[in-house]
Length: 556
Image (cartoon, rainbow, N blue to C red; front, side, top):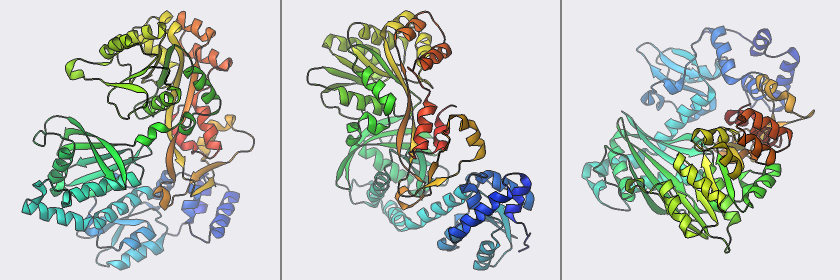
């Protein structure tokens, strides 16, 4: 192949991304690491340039097309002809071909040795080189590895389908073995959900690990009907009903542990999207500090939860851990001396010393109706899974004003916005002022893997945003990626939070309808409120998470 001689370091100096001193530093790092990393990888890791910026610079300089592999139809028949070890060691993928050329996506187009290696493997046609992001290339390689590793089991399922065996309710059938394999793999990765998604050609299985979906399996569409039918039988769903959504539950013993699964099916193009939520009873035994609520926020929250009456709200978007925080709070304040009743949709975990109510909209037994009825049960503590409408909000407020402690959730972006949301739902400001004890807003961020954690340099554009809030000397960390964290650099999640305490001053401001910005400013001046970003930066400086994770979920 034709080689255009370009020194990447000189190119980045020319573009203003680094100085000559920076280049010498990177070359020294490469030498110390015994040339384990390409120089482009070190520039990215040290924060001088982002991976996409580097790809775009090289694309323009070398006149090579930058390609998004996620948007490409990958020719796995072509890809499977190449040894997996070579693809992984050289970070490139032959993703398609024409009559004249083989299309190859590479992370580093200046790595001519790797390109020549792949050229020699199947020297039938010239290569056309494209530039792609490294993670996109690894994604395609992982997909190939998954398809290869499950080939024997899939062939067995196809034989069962052809012989009609998959229709038998047999725990040892190939389909059931596949379901157990999917679930075991998800549990071993500490996944919270399993997503089974059909399209025209394949069935993709993705696990949600630490809030991020990752592809785990890819099967031919031929086995989809057998797989979906067996899962629906497990959840006591109607296997003939494919036009409507269905919900169910089932339990399985996996790895010597009992697990409950909440099952949901939704009709989509090509079949039904199936989601299994993995419910682990041990999760509700977590304490607030184990969730990540700590220091001043933990002290404030514990004070609020000891209030004899009033409303405490947990706010945040879907998937921010609000329900888990509610369970942890109830688990800490439960007592044989108090009667605790919860209203939930659905009930995910069984709480000790709590009477739990499952709402049922089909029979017109929603949050508001359930809340009315339980007030006659003489509760001390009430947990309402979510305040969705004005009627539920009004009844919860009245309950809090008549001597009950009410805990619930709202969907708002920050703590002060919950006040605005309550007014928009129709509650009078004076009632909010009288009933509200405090508001917690939270997000979940991924934790750095402790097994591959190392110091790194944050990119300049990110550093400029937060520079004024950093100490004189600081260090940031990231996970390099290892087998413990599935090479993601992250292992587990933690909460970053903000708490707005409702003292007399804030209460008065709510009563006279002052806006959320004025309330937040005054509360921050008085030490009753600190925006979530501060908690995030604190956790990043302590090496718990990365600053990129914090900025991904929290507004600066």
